[in-house]
Length: 487
Image (cartoon, rainbow, N blue to C red):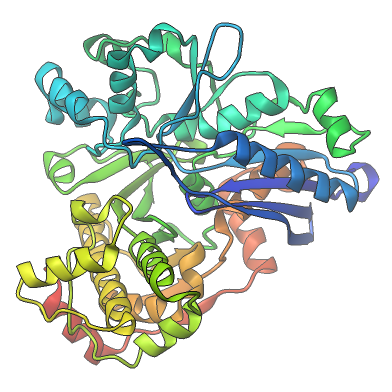
């Protein structure tokens, strides 16, 4: 494609913790369309006491989606984004050692204690700018080393890089995702001294690649399998899904906060330099890298995981639930009746989420929800309150004020959450696009192919012309109620 038409047709693979989505994007100087070419379920698989990802199932879903896209017309390129921190290990002969562990697996406790002893959390943050999380790649690799897996492995590939390897047999470590490992200096280099203190070596990773770099082309056997007679380029996008989502924030200037809302919520600002203060560390903020050398100064919030897992529990007991209708009904419940710390560690792992929410309510003298509607309202109120706290913190720590909050990702579809976030934060919430990670993925590919400007602000200007957003205005009375409940 391309050439005289100035239009390219690309495939964006957006892998989430609960599903994988394959999109076809058609992009030109005044053209943008996005359509879904495939979707498949994803989730951690428990074997014994451990949680794993079915990466071969994910790869099969990618191939099926790519084949579907090819049936509709020629495809110029493909790019993959996913969640961060998890990885697959390859042997020296290039074969996959095993299914990767899921970040919710609890095997890193000893690693954390050892890292605290050898490095210390304050120094870790000063060196890397990454918040302490029990699932960080650093701790996972230390656990693998202790278990003997690294003795058999020649390379670790973060999940998007692993999928790219399956497509091309070529290895690279994309920069924005690499920055989340807690093994890279805040200025963007592997920290060899940190690797040594952790008992690791940076040679476990493939060479670094930037968003927009062309890794190679889909191998001939795979091209034949998906029915393509044309060479399909494999492009490194901003492969951390939040990095791709922030590319697709349709802001007009830098005075915005973003909430990338899905299974996890990432709340932050796009900055030109990291914030490495001790206060930022203690408040749980990270400095992850974005395109053009930017930093995503952000805080992890548990996100819609708590609602997803609650719904899974209710459906096991009572059958299918119309989630959209449930959210609408929850909007009629008493606001801020029950509020919990949505980031409480007890909510991290799979299981009976409503029972855990009830325990947190009892422990904090909050009324215990009794119905799915009350539990749902508790979750959404608590999320909005957590967003307010994070938005306040990011402004205070960065020294910059915001004019609006942009919500992107699946949470855009939750109108109650969007309105309550505006109420809680006391500023306009601009909601959209929904498929922000996929759109950012498509835009980086289109920029690499030369059909649109590859710089982020021209990309955002282009996006504002071709996508729709909804604006939610804050209700001053509700803002006052959230203010009284904020901490």
